[in-house]
Each structure stands twice: as C-alpha cells, then as structure tokens.
Image 1 (cartoon, one colour):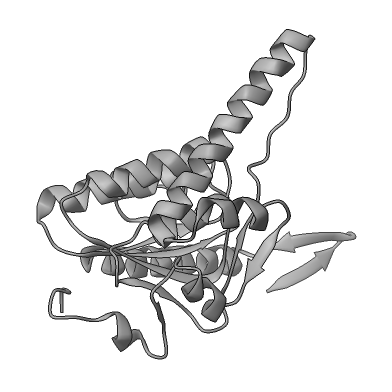
Image 2 (cartoon, helix red, strand yellow):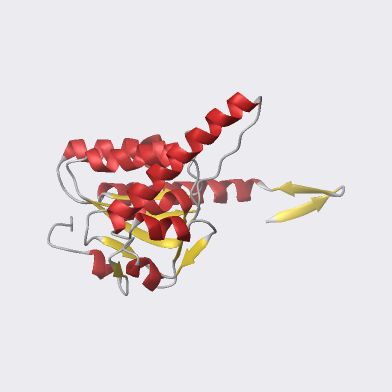
Length: 224
C-alpha cells in the first residue's frame, strides 16, 4: 500500500514486510528447484556476479553463478541437470566459458529454451545433451554476428579486428558442430539478426523437441 504525504510517496512498513515475504517465497522456490537439479540462466550474460537474494545458497543469477551451481551438483552425483534458459545473450567469452563448463561435466545437462534465447545464449541451448534439448512452442531464438568494436591507433584496431574474426570463427564452428548446420550456411544467416521460431530452431538443429507439457522433459533418469 502507498500513501501520499507532503507530495512524497511513502512506503508503509506493511509493504516492506510484504516485499520480504515475496523474496523469501522466491528463495524457497529456487531452493526447491535446485534440490531437484533444476537451474536457471536468465538475463544478460556478463562477466560479473550479480547478487540475487532469492538464489539458493547465495548464488547469483549470472552465468558464473550458474557455473558454480553446475559444478556443485555434478560433484554431488552423476545425474541429469535441467537448465532453463531465457537470455538475450551477452559477452562471447562468458558464453564460451559456460559452454566449456557444460562439456566438462560428468552429468548430462538438459537445456530448455523459454522466452527468448538469443545471440551468445544459443550455443548454450545447443550444448545440451543431444536428444534432450527442448524449446517451448512460443519461444524464439536468434543468431547474429558477435558484437565488437575497436578504438585507438591503426595497429590496435587491426589487432581488435583480428580478435573479432577469431571469435566469429569460433562461434560459427561451435554452432555448426552442435547443430549440424554447415558453416557456410551459418555465416550467411548471421550477417543480420536471424530470428527463428521453435520449429525453425529445431529444423536448424539447435534444439530437439518442442514442449507441450513439462512431462516431456521427464525421463527415467530424472530425479522424481
């Protein structure tokens, strides 16, 4: 509840208590999901840890927080981990670090696209266990050229351009290996933002199945 006093909006103590309740409720839900080996990659993929009081054990929602959770769960036991992804992408190096982390685990990672999965987040979706990469019917994915810039004298700009080409080549190679789509075709597609529906995402090999019910991602391997 908000009340107006001397032309200033004042937050009543009851609202503060309600906000605390919502935070604790979210924390409870995230902890419950975590115990069932369900993780979330949400928002822009940056280098930094992003504090979020709703996350279990104090972990943040950033990619580095997801990596910590992946390592922790993998160390507990070798069982599937389900990773829900809703991200517009972010820094390419962060994507590659998370990609390498998924590949290093003993536990298979099931990836699930919900909302928008774009740019650097697409290789993470495609990096899931083959046959266990899912997408919701109305979700979208997008691939494009990695973003980058250069400044300074001509020599520095030449070095930056060379590094950009390396990142681009790595991005295209990984997408091709994970999807089966030829690199030549991918290079044409990423010249501009290339948006894909759930069906098109599956057709291009970045996901395997469209979700009708959450039971679609259940299997005999999953924790009940």
